Image (cartoon, rainbow, N blue to C red; front, side, top):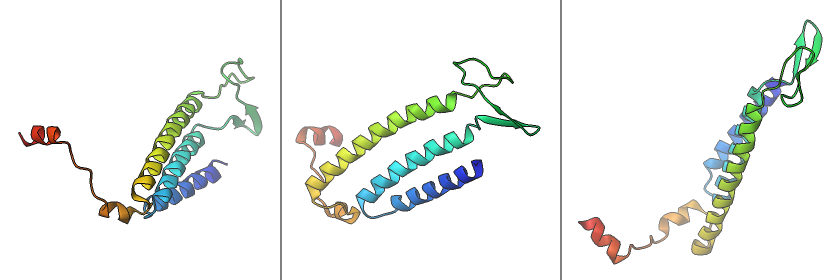
Length: 134
């Protein structure tokens, strides 16, 4: 099961890197979203299995808050806490990135990266230019 999950994580990472190299900003945003999901799956894949097989007998690990299992083993709660925190952070980054894409589209009327190069850069106010010249 871990091998299958690792292969899925590798495929999602590969697709996200492919989307990063696209010329369309929507595809780049989708690459960012997929990259964060692949990172979450990778952490979960490496956190260990909730079932342990010892000499042909399957033992279920207990949740740390509910007590102990027959063998006294617990599931590690740290990866799940890290994933929960990471999901909240990636949600905020996703919202910020989508707001930037909407503002970009309203300003340039295009989502192509090549069109950004041709766009005029905003000019600095005179007060900032004098400070930088000094």
